Image (tube, rainbow, N blue to C red):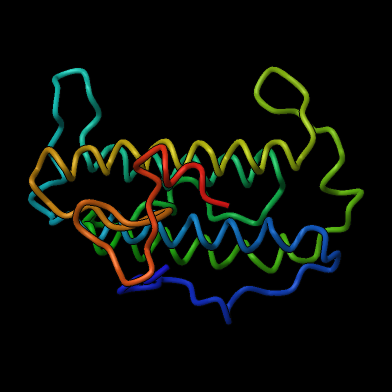
Length: 189
């Protein structure tokens, strides 16, 4: 994949004490980079934009993302997180939200890298149910992808470019990109 901007370089990803769990760190960084790239496509004038009266605005989604990651990771996984009233930037702009998102993601990496298999597999409270920590972690990654997808739709509706996430988009491609847009492409081995 070719990304014009990478918030968290691969060289910043610590090595997991158990190599079986390295994919957790690598995927968390990859997904965080995709979120940051999506957020950077907005301008501050877009923060109040919402495509429907019942939709959240861009600014509300950025704030929710920052606050809900703090809760998932702090409450359910036990990471060291700032106090809730210290999570959001003093002034919410696309740059301040993106920078804060990246700062918080980077701060979690060393904690996750240190955790042994027994920690990941332990069952913990998750809202009103019990789940393994590894399940909670992946649930957070999926929740993050959901909000990133919301925002890519908002970008399209605003007429902005949609950054590449898992492959080329209508706006971004590169030599060697091979999207699966046909039956023939799906049949390649």
